[in-house]
Length: 268
Image 1 (cartoon, rainbow, N blue to C red):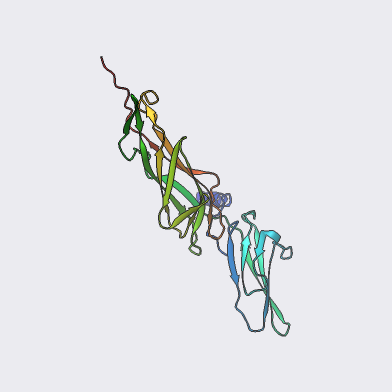
Image 2: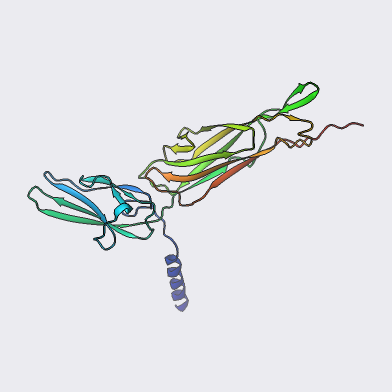
């Protein structure tokens, strides 16, 4: 019995010491989220929304921005800076045509979002798409390695079924004189480095990378000069209703592209 009591107390402290994650909803919004709030309408009535802090009187100010304070349905944008675990109260005052009023209040508990994005490479290693193209410049042999195709997948988790879609910033790092074009699965597009996804599914990203360098027997004596690593990185993930990726920083995936290390031809 004593052992059971000790384990129960330990579990209680363990739970209390960890952040609780949950889907962002109107009553448990994540920092940065926007949610809709509504009340049944009555002919001749007017409506007034407000949000207060935990004392029920201090206005929440920019912590909770109300889109339409006098409509029966409104959106409230919760600031990204609100503190997880804080309590706010959404107030609705209805006044009928005779000037008689009533009030309802919804407690709102700011909750950490479980939303995260992860990127992974389809392959850790890869080759170029075709054979080396060999040409002459006078008597100097030149080697053009052409292009390669690398694929990455961005996978979301912890998205709410109440909202569809998310965005993230995307970048590709390759060596100098390498160019790239990018294509996406049908549910995504890119503009100014920001990828917009229209649903809550994973996104496939395909880069075609062209090595525009030309190598010679001098500049590529050991057969490794054209090898490189393509690294795709994502940042600033955000759901369509404004909830940020719960994992800050940069998430990246990489593919190492290479050919056999064919050295110079020697003779006796």
